[in-house]
Length: 114
Picture 1 (tube, rainbow, N blue to C red):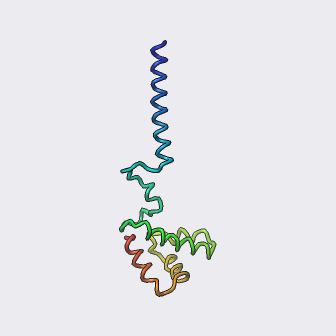
Picture 2 (picture 1 turned 180 degrees about the vertical axis):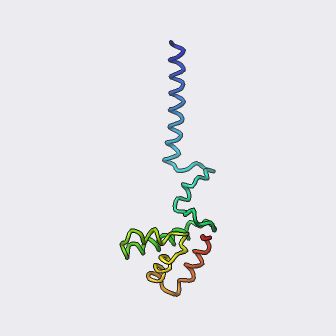
Picture 3 (picture 1 turned 135 degrees about the vertical axis):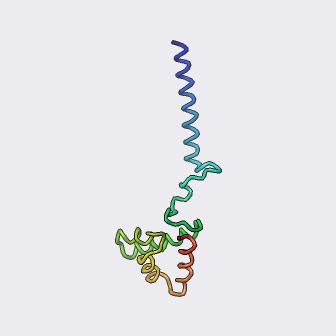
């Protein structure tokens, strides 16, 4: 009986160590060298170009601003569809961004896009 009890205590101790390690990682963020998709949570998997966090944030912000103007639920998702290569994105771009900056946004779409 004492042998079984000792094994149970050792198993519980091992589980406790494992749980504390998992909790520490979730509080501190991903461990160094951890290449999970969590780091790229805003990255659309349909985007097969260069991963550039700042560019993706900028393009996402345009879609968010467009949603805030129109307040239609599908505007935000349609704007991001097909890695920003769609009519909704173009309409948002034309409505919200001065024409002199359109080329910059289009080149950014090509950078992260297909």
